[in-house]
Length: 377
Ligand SMILES: [Zn+2]
Image (cartoon, rainbow, N blue to C red; front, side, top):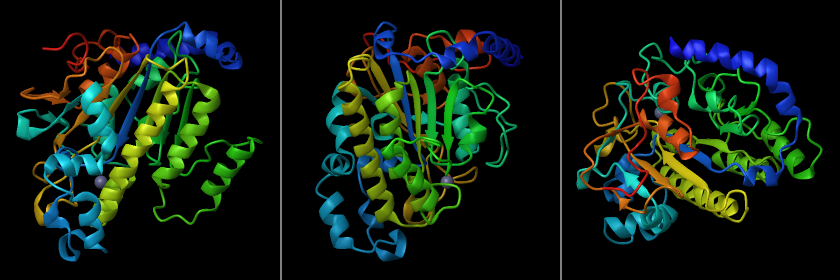
């Protein structure tokens, strides 16, 4: 109830103030006065097993992993024990975030991160992480427009954040998950052109790649397209609240292609590094930007179930969450944190920019932030 009242208020506020704010260009200087920024990055269906343990040698074969070149996979990702392998797979995660940030979900260290929606597939997971609570009504990926306010939609109509919230996702369903009813929020989902109408040569090129690439997945371009679009967007737009949704990790796993799943995880790690470094080189972001990185669901385990997830797939509720930013002590890989949830991501996104999602949505509606801020325990 509070959500829908709030939303009506937000809509009215937009009518009054929205158009003026949208028309006024925001300078980098203005932003430097306003404080924190946050980026939420999700790579769909990347397992905690690979994140914390690196490549699984039992899947390095044709039969169970669909691997085309097992020698190359061994050389690239099976270079030693779990710590060496995970660093080979995701060097930025284990070289930088594990030092300067925090990573939840290594069950071997008594740290469990879980989805609480019980369904263990994408739309219920994205709704849970973006609103702070699972919604049993959302029980299929083609559910349609999200009836719930997301933390992104809310922030896009708050002072200081108007026209400074953007979501880029490869999956076309993000158009429903985020809801289009927020005119001050930039939303690009699926194969939508990232820069329609632009005459800037880089943007024309990106749009033409979106328009002319033969679609391997009908509802989803390659992750590389999304990354290039976001890096280009960032050059001029300076969002304070940014979402990136990568999708290939899930698609290659469903196809049983373990080599491509690993290659994608490795590339996503590089995308995160590139985005972090680009933002740290921009004065308005340097030292005041938080990254939150997670996945929408886990997957099964063993030789066959690794490809799958869903309500009946055992273990697919286990996920991982990584965070790094100026207000987050570098406690590294968290041990003996018995239970954090996907629902806590929403309030964590808000807290990273000094906003209180629990107060807005109501404590009955939403989980509080992850225990990442302050001096730690
Ligand atoms: Zn999936």
